[in-house]
Length: 368
Image 1 (cartoon, one colour):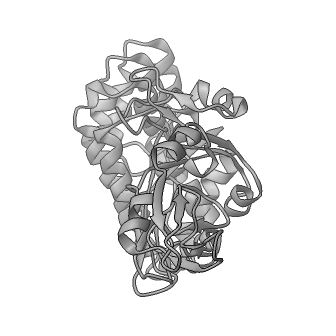
Image 2 (cartoon, helix red, strand yellow):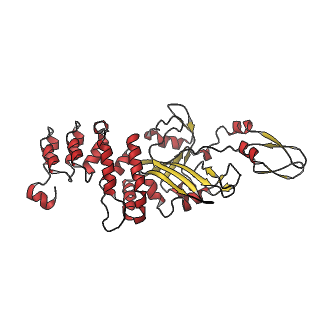
Image 3 (spheres, helix red, strand yellow):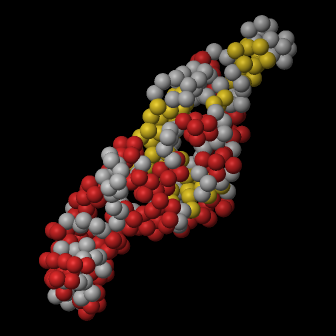
């Protein structure tokens, strides 16, 4: 199953102490302010996720920021889970085209506005960052398209500080340049360097992975079983909030949702993430505009959800789509009133499924 994680990354250059917008998940990059080489992959792998399991965090559907302040090694990361989109018009890139786009090796051209974004298949740096990465979209570190035109447009002439000879400068010029006439080393002033290497805005990088259902469930289990990770519960809330603002469906998301709404707190761990609270937050958002939500979303929550509020259960039991009611009838964690309502459902399939629920004395003894 395909899953995309969206990154916006900045790291602090140890040379000039300014934030540098990372152009891709690469081994090294060059600071556009001072020209120093930056150990990007070192920061991404060694620093950016701290004690947290990077792979399990990225596998989950979360949204939030992680920041390390102060000097060399400092960084800012904005992260979310959603389908890849055009950075210009925000049109979603269809999931069924992502693999073909990566296999082609050619820039992706947005069907809505024509904007092009570079693509890159998984290589050593990507695999080191995430072993199940298959590629990345909008990684400009791999793009040479239009480079010749850029070089021509950005050609500048600067006089040698010693002999006055003309020094031709372009995008590939280092911060220090040797005069070919007198061999003197010239250090380019800040104004000229910034003109050659203007600071770029922080652009989204779309990391594409191939995950299994086990990977998605293991990501949730990880947060439930590591005490310090309770602080990241807000990243679950952020994602749920953003999801209902810009909903999407995919087999990967529905698989994750199945595990999320069916997860149970580990009572043996103190101060772990309260999954029940997060599930309630999801249900409260699901309830808003319930009739307009996709059938697949409602059915997945209805069949697998634990602790679904009684009022939401009754709304799902009255849904106009039989598939939603049938999914709910398979849930063994239903209130008595919901079971009774489903037993009167006009669909024979729903009535037959809910009839399997144990009620009365046996229900109290063995559970409904």
